Length: 119
Image 1 (cartoon, rainbow, N blue to C red):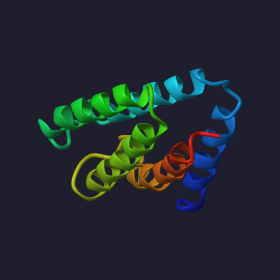
Image 2: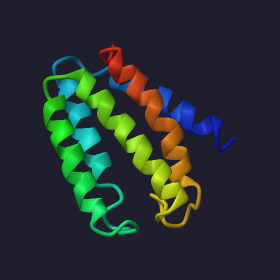
Image 3: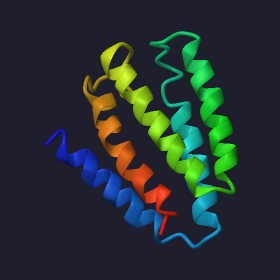
């Protein structure tokens, strides 16, 4: 279930976001990916790299205000960060040890939807 539920969450995210009309949908998703970039800041599991990653995703999200491709790339970058945190850092939810793994499974589902133009 820990592998199936994150896929369902990603699909549910895409379905709910599809209800938001453009151009608000793209802009809202850019804000969401920017927020995801800062999700690990309070855990500090990777020290100063947390700030560097947040800055990178802030830039990608800014570019995503006008580009679904950048939003999709942002979710893929966050997937990599989730895997790094699952293996070496702190989980995204402190009391749920495999939460970063779940996020790493969910994020590519959202990324694929974004790379298709967020239909």
